[in-house]
Image 1: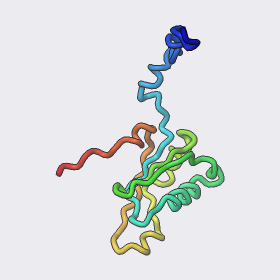
Image 2 (image 1 turned 90 degrees about the horizontal axis):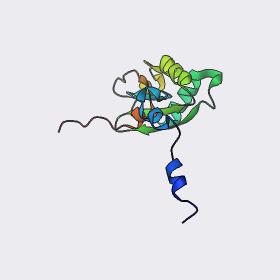
Image 3 (image 1 turned 120 degrees about the horizontal axis):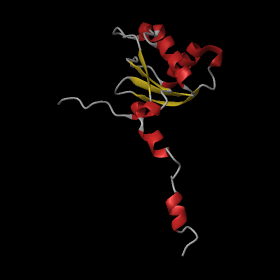
Image 4 (image 1 turned 90 degrees about the vertical axis):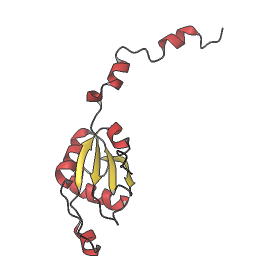
Length: 130
């Protein structure tokens, strides 16, 4: 018998309530935000800079990570906690990037910012009808 015998196999993941806590969507923290309707020249560093400016002095360590989806003209930000994610929504939903608007030939829409869970931020957009 190996030292990783049956007893270990039975105890793997055996914390009471562990599976239920993971499966319930209501338990997932909404510490992500999706920023949509970004201008064509918006990049990660500009999103990060604008977000940090909106958060004020609480900013620098508050962004955990994120990514851009140029096809969707969207950015995804992971923040330290739900409260900061909510503040980003309050500060940036409806934001107009004046610098980008000056350089654009077409009228840019205001940003739409939504607070979501990690799962919602990683989900693919609905497929478009061909």
